[in-house]
Image (tube, rainbow, N blue to C red; front, side, top):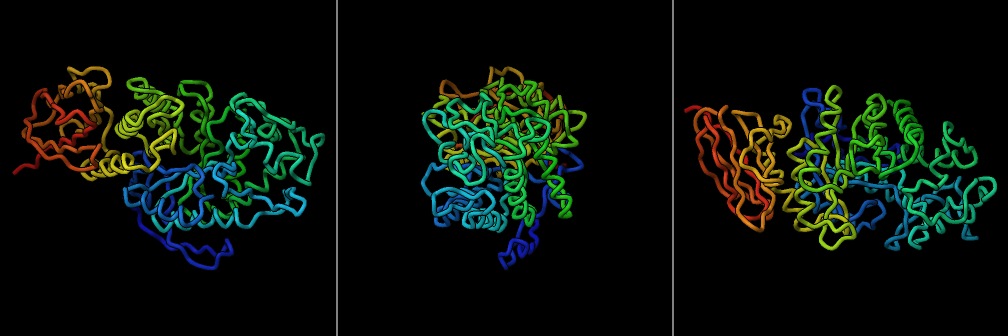
Length: 472
């Protein structure tokens, strides 16, 4: 579903041309669990083969964006990360002849790449969820030496020393240990006025570019364990800068805890005045019923002040370090779809499917379902399912009118559940979707007025949209 396009002048970026851009996202007033554009709801779905696509050269980036859009994708994740993973990544600061960086000057190519990503996604109606800080950029864990190379390391810049900055030479622990003082600089933390001005300048520079576009969401961190004051400081600054530019932006924080009932997540959940949506990506480390229930814990917790729930990292790929499978990814995607997620994206390889063939077919299948049943009209309705084994089927419905049913792949048998159709008078039509093929699978009729057995047409991943038939 592509929103109405509008022309947006990018002269503020010094680019000197016009680009077409999707209109801004806002929580939908009629159902604020979902995003809306120009007053109409929109479902964000996507996948990509990297977290920081803005760093990619054009000959890789443009085909990737085309593939996402052709599959029905309309959202990507973009960390502002500069880790030297592929060899073509750049840092945001100017490199001097003595091989040190000046944190008061910018690397033009870094920011040109960022502009290009924003312009090219805008042309394709693809929304961008930015993550401002990625904790893995500032660590030496597992001998990766990202901190050793980074411009913020005192030995690599001309602007401060180890003594004045308070930074150590090495940070070998996993960043989840939260030992890196880079994330303690704000006034209500350690008030590090040597380093903080350079961080502020980076965020202001980012906004100078991104605020010229309407299709951007802002997330402060990647799976952080930082103190709440860190995220609050940057969320408030981003909102203040946007207001000064005459704009209102949507901001969130992403916490590390896999359990969404953890106190960490409440720093976002309990502050709708600061965080306009929530990102529950870490739920995707969970499987089966616990994955579904964990998500619904948040739905219930936010019930009095609902907001869009984004899941920008759907984990799962055969052979990855977490021992999650391709099937895990597909199931997580579809459980979140029926549970009411506002934005769902496959994580990059090797921890996710990215935008491989399975991800493409999954996106196409989800758009087929959406074309027949508006997900924002449905509510999770597991109580209507009977004769169901654990993780056998998931349901969202408007009882009597529309039912969306997902059957995860079952290698042992053909799944079948009882669906209570008591509220549905007369005949209904079952529209089957083969998720693994990304195609329609055929139709069948069923009578309402009582519980009925719904049998999956195969042992793969299937969805069924069951709709009441109009009166003759």
